[in-house]
Image 1 (tube, rainbow, N blue to C red):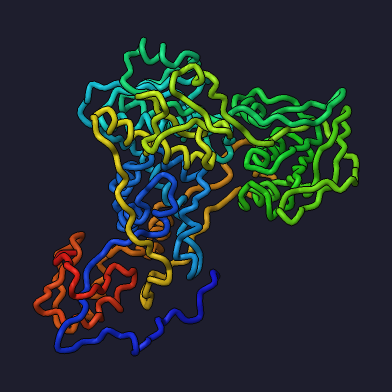
Image 2 (tube, rainbow, N blue to C red):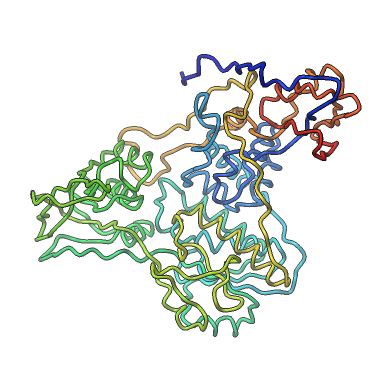
Length: 548
């Protein structure tokens, strides 16, 4: 059973109680604070909002609310690192809400039911998107929904970028990915494959595009300075995963060494096991605590038989023999050589040492500049130094994840739309964060977490079948019910039932409440009874609205 705190009864401090008197000093107002999940979501989803709809069984409205920000719910429900769950206040009680699992349920349901979204009336403007990865496709989706005609030019033979070529099918079945890409195409977005852009201005001119968004992925592998003579088969992780995804994976042999510590390393190692390797070892220069891959990625690899050689660096490869130097971590957390060496045999070595973009073609465009780290210089509106050309995705120095790229694509689309209309887009200010200490939880749904079922044992690596199952309708709804609705009223009637003056008026389902301040004494009982902190007490001198 999940851990539950022994006592969550709120402490009472009578010295700070506002109380009542002949003159009201404070009045209650209904507020909407920012839930931690919403705050942590790179795509900008209103997670609390669509969870509320899902727990009410309103699945299509929940999906539509989700699709307002993210065109890939079935995809991200599988591959997102779900930072939203790291911030979830429910984790202080038992375990975070499995937001990604409910998102996947909604995405899969939408694909099964054939749900579609509609574009806005046509604006007559044309936008070119370079790159059909998650960032480029997200931008295309949002621009199409805003009424613009969008064309995507992609160098590869399939759309999806690293979603297609960098994340194996056991995590993301290609059929599910393509269903959500086809939905984007049904909005009128034209995707041109096998089309590498070399002269951006010529493409823009010939296609009569009013604006351009460049979102090429980081699919070039970092170079490794490792002397190699008559080496065993040495591959880079990006190419290896690409080939495995197309069914053209090379023969690896019985023992495979993967060199690196990010998600590419764990994916390459797990893929090698599925391709028949008897033993796969990840060699990494730091320890597990400093591994770039997420904990669940490392755990999944270990569950499938992958072993790890921590604090180790490959110094040389001669034939099938690797020279490994033992490392130690310095005070700065960086690995330091020790001068102690050992030998390791391998039939194949896969290098997973990071990725970078290759935006060289942009250097031909006047006004576009690059930062010392190679990132493209952009302004606050995502536009480069050349008017009408915007950039995002892996070309920026941000977290290179599909979720981050999709969020950048959404924000870039808003800026491009504003620029095309001759205006400026500004993100609305964020409300105050509804942290756990703000909540008052004498009442909350005691639904136990619902884990997703996974393949076990040898069945996990017998092929590329999806390892993790989705939730049933009942499970997804019950998981959504675990949401505490942090900072947002969910009409529990606590305030309505507690008010001694009958100063709170119910406005009907979905419309919340409002105060009758001619009756309110400012006793703050409603404030103290609100479980999600959707009520604030403000000084009487502050002007406050009468409605919820």
